[in-house]
Length: 433
Image (cartoon, rainbow, N blue to C red; front, side, top):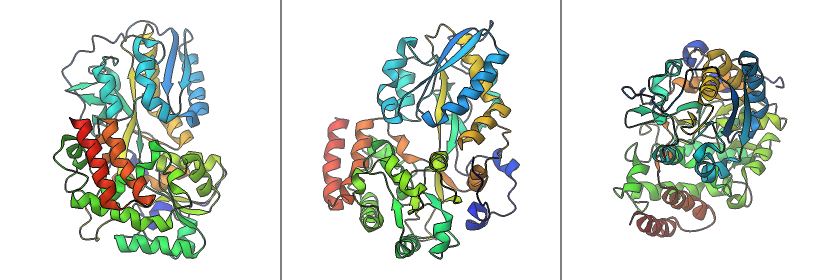
C-alpha cells in the first residue's frame, strides 16, 4: 500500500480525537441489531474428520483475490490434504446467478451471499448448512451477524462491515474550505457548491450501474423515511413511493443533479472510481468498500466518509449507514464440508481476519481484529457512530427494489419526481399482485 498523509481523515472531520481503535474494533455501529441464533442443530453440516479435498470458494470480490490467495496458502500449510480454489464473478452477475451456480455444489462449497434478497433466496432453497451450535459463532460480534440468521437459525456469517455512504477526498474538502462535515441539507449543498467552484466534480455517481447506483439512496432516505423499515413497508404496500417523504427524496436528487458528472445516468462504477482516484471528484457516491480500489488506481489523498444529511440538524436521527454483508456459508450439498468449514474457521480467526481486513481495506465483523490499514483507521470512528443498517437491502423482491432505485436514475435523467414515482408505483403494485 502506498504511503500517504493521515493528518486529517475522520478524526479531524468528525471530532473523534481520542477514540481508541481497539475499543472501536469491538463495538458495532450505533444502531446495529441482531443476535446469534440458538437452539437449532447443524445436522446438515459435517465438521468432524480431517479437512481434505479442494474447496470451491465462490464470491464476487475480484479485488480481494491476491489477499485471499495468501490466506489460502497459509491454510494449506495447516491442512496439507485440503485446498481452496476461488470462483469469482462480478457482483452484478453474482447477485443474479449465484443460486443457480451453487445449487448441487457444482461450485461454492464455501460461498458468499449479499444481505437481504439473495440471502433469503438461498435459505429458502436449502443451500445453507446451518452453523448454529458450531464454535465459529463465538468469534463474531453477535450484534452484527443478525443478517445471516433466519427464523432462529444462523445460516451464514456476514464477514464484511462496510459503510454505504459517499467516500470523500479530504484534500478536496480542505481546498473547498470545509474542515467539518455538513450537518444539514443546506450545508451539504453548500459543500457541493464550494467543490464545484474549485473545479471538482462535486459528487461522482454511478447511475448506470444497478449494483451501485442505489448506494446513495441509503443515506438519502435514512433521515427522510418515517420509519427505519420504510423500504420493507414499500414492498408490503404499507408505504408508497408516491408518499411525501419519498417525493421529498426524489426532489433532493433533482437538486443534486447539477453537481454530478456529465452523463451520470450512464456512468459505470469503474468510470466514477477512476474520476475520483485521479483527484477530479470531491465525493464518490458508493461506499467504504471502494477504498482499496481507489488506492489500486494510484490515489494518495486521505479519505473520509461524508453522508448527506437531508433534514435539519435537529431532525437528523442518523449520521450515516452501515451494512454487514459478504455472508459466508457452507454448502449443504458439499462433499468436502469438513474442509469448507475448516476454511471458514480459518478466515474467522482474528489474526487471519485482520490480514484480510488490512489487505483489502474492509472492516470485518470478527471480534478482536487489529486494524493497521491507514484507511481503515481513518474511518474507524464510524464503527461507534449513530448509523442505520443500510435500508436498500430490506427489499426481498429485487424487481421492486429496482423499480424504487430507478426512480432516482429517472429524476437525474430529467423526469419530474412525481412522474417518476407514479410510474414506479405502478410497477411495484404489479409485482406485489
